[in-house]
Structures are given as C-alpha cells and as structure tokens.
Image (tube, rainbow, N blue to C red; front, side, top):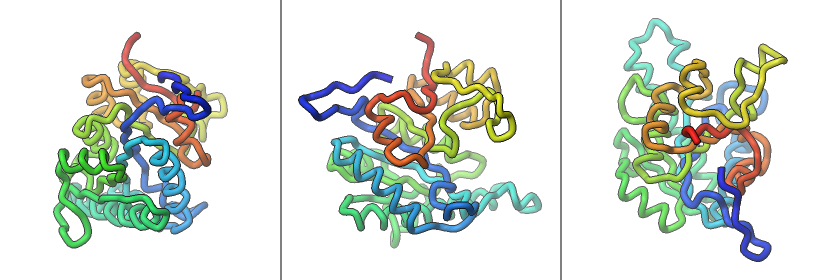
Length: 248
C-alpha cells in the first residue's frame, strides 16, 4: 500500500475512492451471532464519518449473516435460501444508513433487487455520481442472483464504480496460513500475492472475488474492523491487516 502524503499537518489518504466490505457480524450485538445492534451500527457510522471528512469517497457492501445464514437451512432450495440472504443484507443496509444519517452523513442505499419504497435500484453511473457528491453509497441484496457471495459482490461493485481498493473488514487482523482461532501458531501474512492466496486455498475471501481482483489489479486489504480507528489507519497506509496484491 502506498504511504500517505502529508500536506502540512493533514495527511492525504492513500486512496480516494474505496469499497468497504462488511460482514453481517459487524452489525450483531457484542457476544452474539444474530440480530442488529444499534450501538454497532453507530460505531461503524462514526468510523465512516471520519474518513468521509478526509475527502474519501466511500461505498460499502454489507453481508447478512447476522440475520440469515443459508447454510444453516440445508433442506431448503439453495436459490431460495440465497434470496432470503439478499433480503437480510437490505435490513443491515438500512440500519447503517440510519446511523450515518443521524451523524450527518448523506447516504444512498442501492439494491440489486428492486424495492423502490426503501432504496434506489443499483445503477453504476448513479452510484458514482453519489460518491462524487460526498455521499456514502451502501450496496445491498448482493448481485441479485443466487450462488454468489457478498465477497464476489464487493469485488464486482468495486470494479464497476472504479474503486482504487477493496477493504474487507473481518473479525481477525489479517490473513493467516491457518485459522488463528484453532491454531495458536498460525502465521499472519503482511502481504500476499493473489496467486498465493488461491493456491493456498485460504478462505477469508472466496476464490471468485480474489480472481476478479487479480484480473483487474484491484488491491485488497483484509483487516480487523472492530478495532476503533482501523478504517482510517488503513487509508493512511499504516501497516495493519494483510494486503493482497499482484506480483511486484
């Protein structure tokens, strides 16, 4: 990641336009897997408000695992389970929108499944115009098609809006060679090339999303979103998380 340029005492962010991927876990009450916490939404909003004030154009893709996990309904038709998951992401998007608006940040929610009473339809050029006007754009309902993850949605949306980087907020502080929750000797990568990520079979982000970013030279930063101020640190080029990128 490039280091920030400083103008007087005011650092300039490394990226001007980003796509932030947030899992549904970001909205869950502390210590719980399910539900929407107003406090969690406001904590996220405060971090986003801070980087918007720095002049960064922010779009975000939200997951819905805190409301619905399709894999927990193995007897259900996969496509139908995925559609339920898409609707769950809309609930989180509206919660984040409300928290941002309460903090004075202008927002727009765009959904891949049309629901005109609560959100705009997803239109890439309109999303870009919102970003240029300083609005946070929240993408919901995935790609509008089953069998695709919200990671893939994040990569696709980032490319369509011409984001300079994809930031993936997780519950761990980067990419490890094994699950650090199960292996205390797991080794964290500071940087990782796309092909290494794919050949190692790492699962913090799905292979389709990684391949999209690889083919289009879009850097990915995987970091712990729960640590206050980490989104700003990422944008200022501080060494947090794991940077996934192309060969030097």
